[in-house]
Image (cartoon, rainbow, N blue to C red):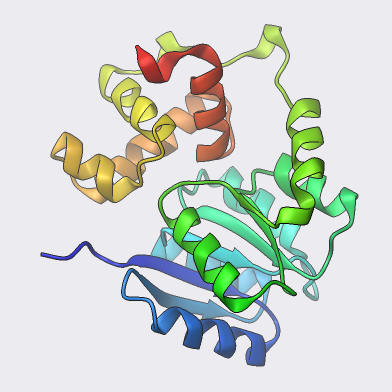
Length: 219
């Protein structure tokens, strides 16, 4: 039996762009668009209701921009992977998005095939970023490391949360973690929310980076 397609929510104030992306994704059996929003407030509401696997969100939108929406979603401990999709290649925007908990940053001028390839990677838990921004990403991660005094405490997690953390570090999606541990996707999402809150981390990417740095993925 085939895996359930990765669910995707599109948040962008340009209807033509949303339609184009949706048509591209519809050609991919491993992914499906489950919702669309034309502004950040509507996008936040849909994200919390749908809990999609992946959120593709514009940076520059009226009333509330993508960074503020991203912060609000992370404050709700949403487990969706959130990818910023924008025309801006400005260092400040890239750094702000990553520090706010984005799981990726893609530019709208990329080739359609490249975008689909990146979305496939994002859907299985990988961080994605447009090639020409990789240097900025490295700088952002270096400057955003938590201080030793405030490092996450692995021992604060339950045994189940520790198991899930290690699988996140291996790049597994919620669906794959659920299958491996014989629990539902919904149960995995609840555990992910709890462990993010306990560790004071904002995204699965931060969890994975921290776990790899600490060698927890091998323990």
